[in-house]
Image (cartoon, rainbow, N blue to C red; front, side, top):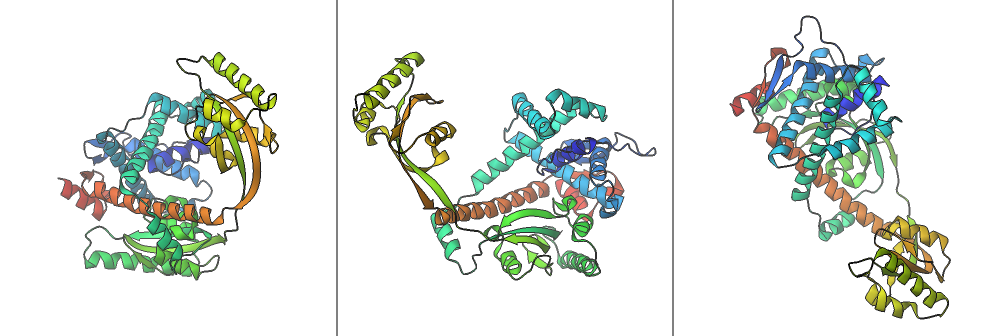
Length: 448
C-alpha cells in the first residue's frame, strides 16, 4: 500500500499519468538539513524536503530493482529537473488565470481512492500514516490538474488539423498503419548549443549504444542515461499508432523486428535510440448502426415536468392505440431542434451516438417497435427503432485516427516547444553545487 502512494506523488510532480501507488518518504541524511533551499525558480523555491520526498518515492518504486537506478547524484538531478519543470508550469498556469477548485481536488481524491480500492477517509489515513501531510497530497493533486489544464490550453490554441492534412497523410507513400509498443532513450541537445555541446551529446549517445551492445537492459539504460521526462519509467512510450510517429522514426521502426534496438536517430531536440517492444496490425472495424426516430417533450416555463410526462404519454397512445402518423406528431410536438422538422428522423448512427439512455432503449426494442415514454436529462422521449445494419467503419475510423495522430504529433511538439521556451526564459538558480548542470548555470545567468 505504501508503494502505491509513493509513485502517485512522484507522478504528480513529474506530470506523468497517475499510477496510484503509495508513499514511503525517505528520511534525509543526518548531515543534510531538511528544509534548506535547493533551487530558486523565478520567485518560488524548492526545498530539500521536497527533493528528498520525490527521490524517496522513486527509490520505493524500484525497491528490489535498485540496480536499474542511476547513481544518487544523477537521480537527484533528474528528480530536481522534474520538480523545476512542474513548478514552472504551475507558475505559468497561475499567470494565465488557470485555477483549480476544492471540488475539483475532491473529485481527484475520490478517483485516487477508488483506484486503490479505498474510501476517501481510508486514503487520507494511509497518506498520514506514511508520515505525509494530506494537505500536501491535495496540493500535489491540484498541481497535476492545473498542469493538465495548462496543457489543454496551450494545445488548443496551437494545434489545428485540416482535411487536406488528413488526405495528405493517408495518401502519402510513407503512411504506415498499425500500432507499436516502444521505448526510447533521449539525449538532448541544449537550445543554441555550439559544436562542442553537440559533440558531447553525440559522445554520450555512443556510450549508451556501447552499453546496450554489451548487454545492458534497455529500461535500465533509459533510467541511467535518458534525459526525457519518461526516463525514470524506463523510457516506455506505451502503444502508439505508427502514423503518430515522426516520419523518420516511423521509417526506422518499419524495418525493425520485435526486440530490435535502433541506431541513434537525430531529431529536432537531440538524439534518440528506439526499442520496438511489440507491434500489432489494425483490422477491419464493423459497427452496428441503428435507424430510429424520436419525439422529445421538454419541461419549460410553460410546461411542468409532470405535464411533460403526461403529454408524452398522450402522444404514445395516439401512436400505438390510434395509429396516428409518428412523423406528423414529431413535427408538431417534438422539441428536438435537430430532428423535429425531419419527422423525428435521427438517421443512421452508432448505438451510443445519442447517449447511454437512448442506447439502452435501442437494445430493448425490435425493428418497427415504439418505446413507452422514458426520461433523460433532456426530457421525455418516445423512440421508434426503424432498423439496424452492420457498417464497415474502417475508412472513417482511419480518418479519425489520422486526425488524432496529426493532432497528437502537433500537440507534443507544441507543448515541448512551450516547455523549452518557459524554461529558457525563467530564472533558475540551483543553490546546491553538486546538483548543478551546465544548462542550470546558463538558465540562471540568462534569467539574472
